[in-house]
Image 1 (cartoon, rainbow, N blue to C red):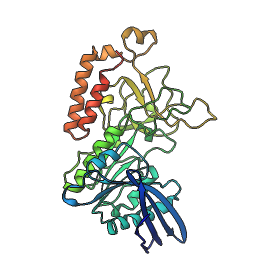
Image 2 (cartoon, one colour):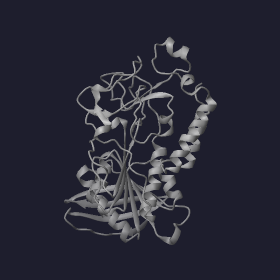
Image 3 (cartoon, rainbow, N blue to C red):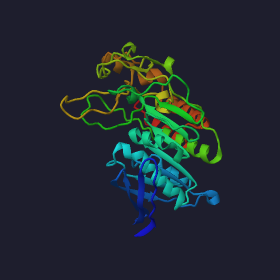
Image 4 (cartoon, one colour):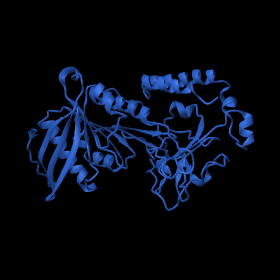
Length: 369
């Protein structure tokens, strides 16, 4: 076991990092940290992955994550960043921000990291925002708070944020100069099929997150401004009870209760925010809510996806008011060619990576018509 440091930090938060150790663990390194916060001990474990190629110019950069994910980590390593994944699951919410500051202080000091980026969801993202001045940039998912300048951030959230018991906050003003906001239209944070009535909305958020990470990386290392925000403001939201959903028997009713949600088209698909290729050219109605199969069972956290019929005859047989795939696109060849145009446009706008654009087109070739 290699002891990298045994440091103590004392400050207003009364937190101190007593130990930060790493040891070989296959291709990566296992991390363990020990410290105290207000007199109580805490233990954190994690994994440190290093890039195969050293960063250009020798400047050391690192991405801190608090949830294991393969959405961004391989890309970060490819771009020359180390990736430290920390397990915050057992850490009290009030401890996350001071603990992050302690660990980041160690990374800048003992490990000589020149640039530190963070990526997290929900309450972990809020903790990163609270510790914002310790980061150079943050990729935030479904966060309730944003960091103050000079920390740069890119925040995103999906459709489920408007339909849960406590809906996402509404923004009446544009993002501040140090940030960008992206609403991932028709996407949901969970694709778990546990106890859900309707087919699952399994659209992947990874392509959007990868493009946004590259934008944040270039913003913090080169000063290249990211794409403009694409998020709903006041005029883009409407009282949920006024939304006119298509009359499809398999579409669950939306959750009750006062809330505002993004406007939708005749198919029930959202018309504001960042619309990825599979929503710009949909094959289904994608909702940010579903319904529980067993009312006494676990909560259904996924959204719903109600496929379009293949032909007009098919939809009329089921009294489906939505146009069929053939009525919309004519042929699969047209659908594939149009998908290429839509995907390449997003690549030019730096909202999609070329590899992911090619993947959308490849998937379109197997569309169900």
